Length: 395
Image (cartoon, rainbow, N blue to C red; front, side, top):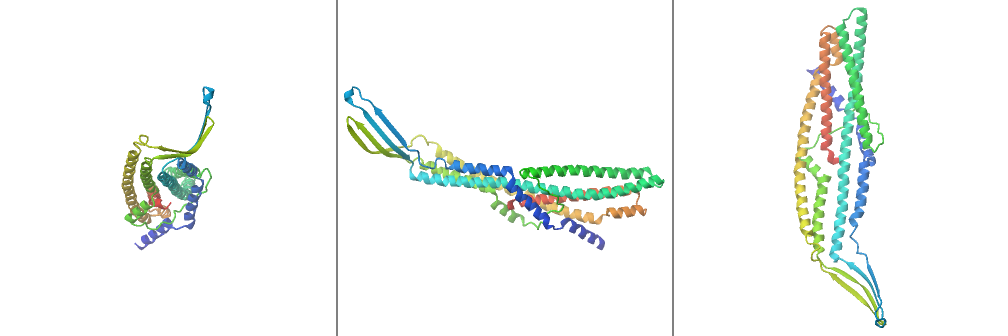
């Protein structure tokens, strides 16, 4: 029992080893992607241009200049000249509401960028986790091939000397072939994910060969985690900003029902006489804005519904991930215990050479051990993947 406990502790130390370079490496990859990702850059440029677009219409109207020259008929009627310079403007409340509105719209653009950035960084994090798993598997496969190659060479020599048999030789040959093929496929997957990482980094290659996952402390409780995740959720903030925009649009549309003013200078010359003075005009909105307030109010109700819907879906999404995390954590622990209780490859080889087990039993036990250890690696990858998703709010 004491030996099993020591083996379990050894496996636990190997699997959970904290390597500062692993944490730093993933952090540096995320930092690089946040700077170089083309989608993030495009979003930033788009919302920068949209910020200027939101300001359109918030300034005064262009001044109007009118000039009329009319020849009289008959000639004795004289000629008439009219010259008018006017400036139209909305009621002062309109400009205040427009300023509030475009500032809120610009703020919403920042949340849109945060949403994209967070999603891309999470995708990058998950790619790194996939690569850690594949790199770790690659290292293990290399070790397995070394053992398999040694067994194959030993059985080949025995067969040449007449001490072995063809069944043992074929078993070792098949085992070596399968491992070599698995390694080849694994390297292909590594190359594929490295290309994905390069794409996320804006086409700039990143060397990522980590085999250890970053250190992960115990997650906080579900309720606290869900609340923190909701507080920092840029998608929720974006919806809340949209609701604020809808309410400000209501205020703006109501203020547009106030009269528009027009003032300026008017000059007139006729029959040798000149007249000049102040021009004042008034526009009374009766039909143009008929449905604008109702539409804005409907938009406000719709955005509030979206907020409620997102809060509900967000809660159950986090709940699902957290329950999955707890399940994977338990399975991970169980697999570690199981691996620690199984005979290692070296122990199986000793048992076979001492005659305690047959060659057939050796390969059966070896296959079972490999399958169990591979399942442990997959559970480990899924575990850290779920942790990354639950910690998305930190990105």
